[in-house]
Length: 204
Image (tube, rainbow, N blue to C red; front, side):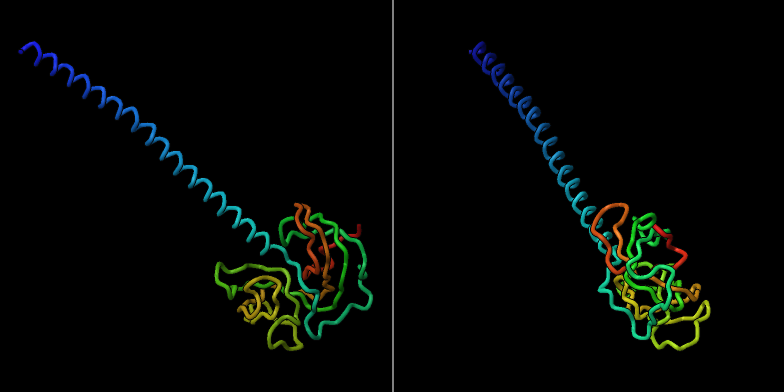
């Protein structure tokens, strides 16, 4: 009887030991799989968020417009670059602009302003935006505005610009051009971009 009890006890210990080992071996792979799945999910979500942000940035940066110009803006009589001229952009207002080939679609005589403004859509203030023309200032007068003058913008080149409070950073009387161009970084062509000044262009 004692011998049978000893054998039964030994068998029970082996069975329990085996169950314990099996449980341990199974828990680690399951745990690792769960962690891997969670990590993969987080990476996919991060990649998706980044793609959406990039798309938003690209849309915000595409300064295409309808081609409409503000009331009172006067066409240039004898511009250096007439409508239809092929030119090279020397400015870097936005990514892919500098060095791009462009076509002149409008030329106007006005005062161009560099402005800093706070978008009506929220977000960080925009510093030293180039350019807003005199006719795109709300409640404008015939006088060129001095640096530091507080104004309200009528321009809608970018989201949150129209009706935004702004400050004049600098001004220059010049010919401004509206242009079509294809960014050097690729992507869709930009149509009726406003504005480029004469010294930001060179002949092709």
